[in-house]
Length: 113
Length: 114
Image (cartoon, chains in turn orange, yellow):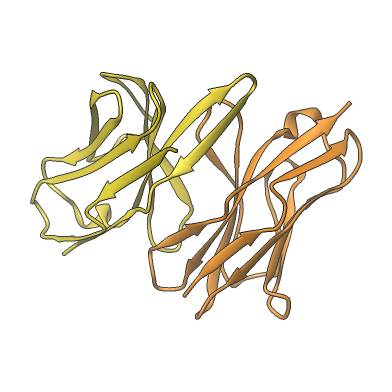
């Protein structure tokens, strides 16, 4: 069975400092992994996805994530936070060949001036 | 507490048949409602969202339609299914508190069109 755990419900960083949002997963097969962002009053937006190609995945808005099979992790990072990054972030796992997707509970990112 | 229901959980339909997926929310009023689809190997795609009864916005042109006959009911429909409609459909609701909006997802419906 597949599952995904976002380790922090809230993360606060100062503008200009690095961002780390943690995600661990479990999957019986080769998973596809995604990070989504939701800004207030908007739908989900795909940041990046991993589908068994390069383990370091670059996404939009300067975000990237590294797939580490040995650690079953897919943490999201950004070198320098911007005020516009304040939002809720979801880590999502999907088993290969299975359309069903599992959402993490989300991490709300706060950016301090 | 709030809960969101979707049914059916799994559906197998022939090409050309109609579709109706239902989503209901309990424990909140006047939520924003969303329909998403994930096709195999692809990311989540926003299909429709609604900010109130009878108010539907469509994000992408497609074979599907949505309706909101009641405040906490959101229905996804098609008159004639295509093979490409196969996928995993998620309903979500959100409520805004101050500057923050939090989105909650239903359990999803897996649709296979043959």
